[in-house]
Amino acid sequence: MSYRASVRFIVITTLLVWATAVELPAAAGSLVTVDHERRYTRAEVDRYADRLFNQQSTPSARYDVDVFRMELYSTDLEGEDTVVTTQLFVPRLGSVGATRRGPLYVFAAGTTGLTDACRTSREYEAGVNWGLYRHHMLAHAGQGSIGVLPDYMHFGDPDRLQPYFIAEAGGRILLDSIRAVLAYLDSPASEVRIRPAGTFLAGFSQGGHAAFAAADIRDDYAPEVELSGIIGYGPTTSIEDVFREFSVVAPAIIYTYAEHYGRDRFDPAEMLADRWLDSLERDVTRQCILGYQSYYPWGPHTLFRPEFTSALVNRRLESEYPEIYAVLAEQQTGLTGHGVPAFILQGTNDVVIDEGDQTRFVTALRERGSNVRYRLFQNSPHDTRQIGFFEVVNWMREQAQRN
Image (cartoon, rainbow, N blue to C red; front, top):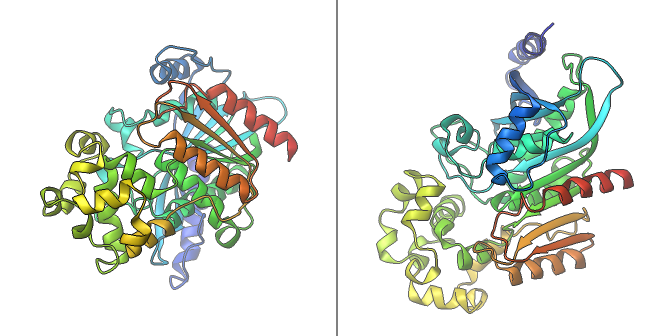
C-alpha cells in the first residue's frame, strides 16, 4: 500500500471514531493527514542548497529526500483545537537493509508575517525568498537528518492571524509537531526506515524564540517529549531587544500584543509615533516580512514616540513603562531553567540582535543550568545557518551519542 493510501485509511478510520464523540477534543499532536509530496534526488537537493549557500561550501547531499505534507492538531491560546501544517523531510535510504537512525531536526522559521498569505509553507509555493526554508531543510535531510518544518499557529486559516512572538503558541506547535512525527514514524502506515537519534529544536531569529519557548513549556505541555538540544541561529528571545535593534517588526508585535493582552495593558498609542499609529492594523496585515523591511524604519527613533524611544534605548522601560515592560518580560523565552543543552550561533555584524545582548542571554542561560556552546562568527550577518551548517550537524551527532 502507498504512503498516501495507507495513511489516509488510518486517518479516515480515526476521524470516523472521533465523529461518534464530537464533544471530545482532538489530542494535541495527533495526525489529520499525511501526503507524500515528492522526492528530491541528491542532485536536486544540491541545487536547492546551492541557492541558499550561494554556492560557497555547499554540503553535498548523501541521500535523496522524500517530502511529506502533514496536518496535525495543536491547541490554540483559547484552548481550542487548531490544525497545523508541517513539512516533513525524510532521507531516502533505499529499499533494503536495516533501519537507520538520524537526528530529528525540528526547525522554526524566522519572521514571515502575520497573515495566511505569509505562512512559512507558502514561500516555496510562491517562489519568494523569506529565508529559503525548504532549501535549508533539504540540506539537513540530505545529510541524514529527519527534518520537520511547521507553519506557525493559525497559518492556513485566512480568518486568523499568527500569535506573533507569543511564546506559548510557538512552543506548542513545535512540541505537537514532534508528537505527530514520532507517531507517524512508529505507525504501521509508515514505510520510512529511519528513526530519530535525538530530538533537536532549532530556530532562526523568531524561530529561536519559539524553540526556547518549547523547552520552557515542555514539562507542563508535553512531558513525554525528550529533547536532546536546542540550536539558535541569531535567536531573538528578548522582545525588548527586538524593539531596540530590529524595529521593522515591532509594529506587528505591538499589534499582536495589544490584541492578546488588551490595550489597557499594552497600548500602541504609548509607543508608536502618530505617523504609524492610525493605520497600524492595515499596515501589519497587508504585507509580509519583505514589505515590513521596506516600509518601517530600521531604527527606533522615527518609529516610536521620543519619550518611549529614550526609555527603550537607555533601558529604562521597567521604571518608566512598567506595564509594557512586564508584558515584554513575560514573553522572554529560554530562561526557565529547562536545562536543555544549547548551541547558539551569532554573527558579529548582526543587525537584528546585537552581539552584546546575545552574550547576556547566553550567560543567563548558563546560570540557569544549560550547557551552552556559543559560537561567534566574525563579520557574519544575522543568518548563521550556512556558515555554521557543519558545526551544527556535528554537534547534533555529539549530543545524540551522549544521550
